[in-house]
Image 1 (cartoon, one colour):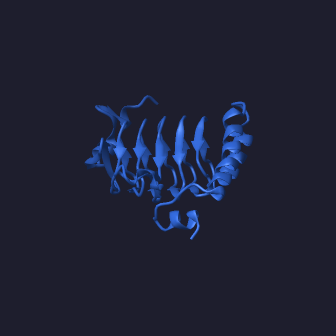
Image 2 (tube, helix red, strand yellow):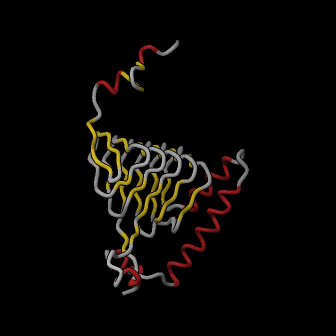
Image 3 (tube, helix red, strand yellow):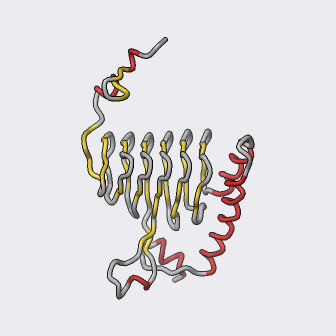
Length: 200
């Protein structure tokens, strides 16, 4: 069994020539993406399609980004990521439609065994899924194997170690559900600020 086959089946794996070659290709594309002039929007969009396995329409990612492999990432239409998005994407990262990423978000599919006798044995990787309409606040970290349900909001600075259901607000380290998204959220956009009191 190759190291990539081990990784894809949830076993401990090690870097090999195949993985290193994939990373080298991606690093070159990411470096180019990160150094494009701000006005070169077409060039940036084209590079995103070279970097990632699948990219929907109207995806906008603010540089700089950090990406490990790229090929295992799919991004749905209308997704926006602010600066310093980091994807440790040794295995699949599935990002739905109309997802919002604040600055400095990290999605990490890979970890190491906890016990020191085994920590250097290799790595394990499990997929991450971010469903449609999720908003991840600034400095959120999502750990291996996590799914965040559609429409949910993850508060800034959270470390998400377990699945988060749909239609909730969650935050903390470790991240926990605070409350469901409610009808009040359709009336108020921030504290006592109402949508219907906006200037015309």
